[in-house]
Length: 119
Image (cartoon, rainbow, N blue to C red; front, side, top):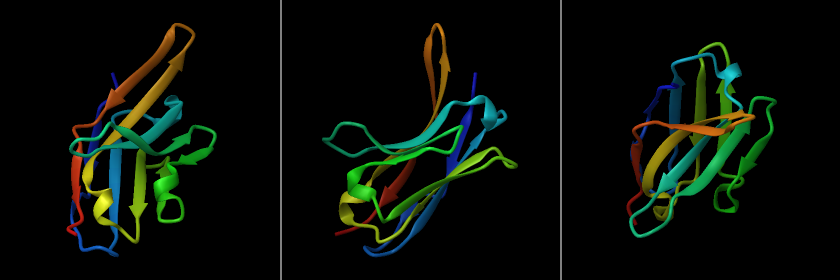
C-alpha cells in the first residue's frame, strides 16, 4: 500500500505560479509511473502530467509549456511546477502512483489539493 500526501495547493491569480508536491511512503523507484490528475466541477478527471521510473514524461496538451513535472528520488517526492496559471486550471489535483505487475496495474491516490485561479 503506497500512501501519498499532496501539498502546495492554494489560490493564485491568473498568470501566477504554484508548486505542488507529492510525498510517497516508499521508495519511488518501486513505482512504475507517478502522475498528477485533476478533477474540475462538471468535468471528468484528466491526466495532467506523468513521469515513469525511467524518466519518460507525458503532459496533457492543455498544460504543455506551462507545467513541469519532476521527481526527487532522494526525497521520494514528485513535484508539479505550474506557471502561467489560467482560470481553467482550477481543480482538485490528485497525486497518483501506479505499480504495474503481471497480474495488473495497481493505482494509489492522494487526498487531493485544491488549486483555484479566479477569473
